Image (cartoon, rainbow, N blue to C red; front, side, top):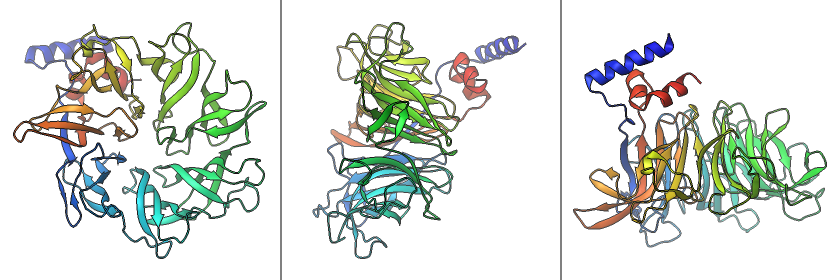
Length: 454
């Protein structure tokens, strides 16, 4: 019955001339080189037109940027906006913070906006604190939650364990904040240790999830964590996915693990079989990870064996989204992927995966792009934004971000302005049409039907 219904709908669409292709996407520059930030200066170039960025289900976004302000202690900004509208100044380097007293923002690091009234978690570097041992902090919006040098209050740390630095921070829709922190726990032999904690910013309650020296797998103990912003994920129910290194045999010391609230699952591990037949996960392990609010996950991983096809993007440990050496119809079916960059891979609540790809087209002006599952949605040298051609798509560091719903995507890149003969760098917002009967069918019958009835 369902198949007959689908066939009937397809027939109606074909008879009315509606194409069964990917839906049209709206792409807008939201922070562009040359834009004026009132009272500060113009947005500058150097692929610093956007740094860290984040967007929620309401299309509310934050983008970090550099400006042309001559005072390099005050030239960095964070802009905040909604949808394709212009952003307004939210934070600025040199801006005073309410706590600690007398301190100012030096630089910005990790930041994430949630879907709960757009609350934000920040890792901010500070100046004016009087020392280099307390010059960073974790903030809930603009309220200080933990300052470097504070003594950890979570159970499980040794007495008088200080925080000595912070890496990644993420906020979920319950307004809890996950932090990957450096500490100096007297119960751990090294002077710089790491741990993952969760803090409630309203009660200031800290919970230690896992740290260096903990036994994660029988007889195998944590030695470190991968510390890039895309090496962890944190969702509303409190689940955390993270990349971890273990002691012991170096042939299987890397793992992708998940905290479930009551224990740990190993999602994938170096040396274990991958979803590619005859290939195990390799020594470079897992270079990016994300998880949606259903607990589905995606990672970019390394395989053992040949180096021309040893990187894959895999969903839920079972489905290969892309692999070096493979092709897709969306890139012509003849070219093959050579790399997937070093930035994030992201999964939305529909299970759709956003990723960067680089392929072997001899024309290097059009051989990179962004993909949603197997669909090429932004292509260097081809995609138009307000009449300007996209000339670069970032595949590094914080190149892309996406709302949980998948409706909003930010990418970092550059466009060529034909009118003024200028290449302009910036951050660009993609609006993906919300699922509905027609937009589902327009994006390809089999893909959309799987999404809605998975």
